Image (cartoon, rainbow, N blue to C red; front, side):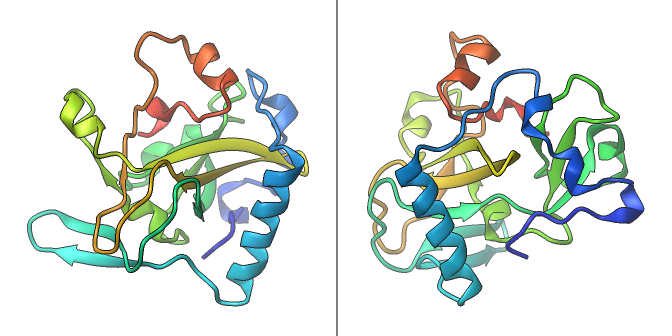
Length: 195
């Protein structure tokens, strides 16, 4: 899937994804970047995707590689899947859950579970963020933002990625030395909320 899915059987509706309920302010994209994101979604609906492939390795599992060079600051994916409440997160075996909306209550806070309805973004390789050398390998970042009053999460390249290289993501990028509020205010998503 390339969209957030709100499964009725989990008691979640799209109306629950109300960005105004988030504990901290989630900023919208500027008009230029919002236009780019909307064009990206339009292109996906027409079958146009970034030049990537999902590969499987017996030892490390699935990962994502570039098929062609991808320039810096290229939008590559929206993080999508089934939207469930944090309260129900224990019912899934996924290791790729991401907070979408944090209201402060497990009954109304929302997470994205990409297990049954996700896209390739769930296979981005994590890095060992305790090592400076590993951190330099990260070439993808996330941005949580508001569009039409709803929280969304997009991934973009943070540097040029050559063909054949893995797309790598630091799941805890930028948290060091900052409070969650300081990190959230920069507009980048505090990935310590990955479960």
